Length: 267
Ligand SMILES: [Zn+2]
Image (cartoon, rainbow, N blue to C red; front, side, top):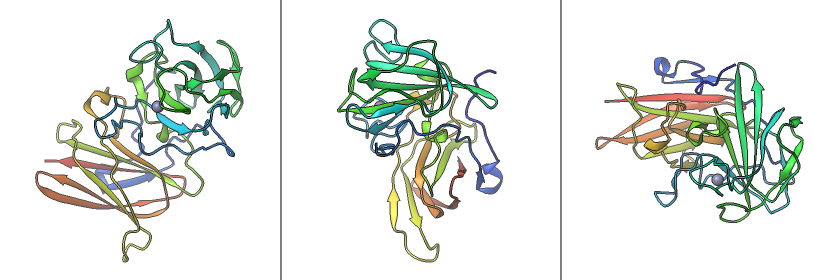
């Protein structure tokens, strides 16, 4: 089984948007009473408005010592620190980390757990889905105690990451929205993006988000999308982008436990 980029699960170009079961093959690496929610402020691909380096994973804010669980069954590719073996842009980036290898239906994927305070597994061990593998901490380059979680195609390739929220089981009662903004040549485009939630499509919107478009350095040919928003309630959403001085809008539908994909081909 070889690594492959994010699959195109349906044809959003043909019908503006499409809904599929997605590839939600991973369980959340933190479970209640820990905080199992992904932080939206520094999402995958975010630079926090240009103030930080592009985020190759997602953060789950939790106190030091909260159990970290295997996102799926697999084997421990690596458990240790990164003082002499590089997994990120520099040594001692992730601190104590674990990388698991997973044979999932049709593909091999790796998950990475960074900044741990404690490791419960050693390289080569087998783990079950949901098994405790370590504890949250702030080792390496971490602002406060949290779990940094990544999904990778290749275990030691920092540029082979995918958005973990395409793989993590959605929070109960929510779905995931993946957006692709490209030109006619299929090259990713960057532009301000606004997403509004309309519980009643004939009423007013009740919430809005402005997710960051992944920066160009994140485009290593692995990602179908260049913007993503997860943990969304089912219903109607209006996506608006500013392109060449004009506002373009599109309505899409979200369903519980499903992936909605929409593609804008920009002139
Ligand atoms: Zn992080």
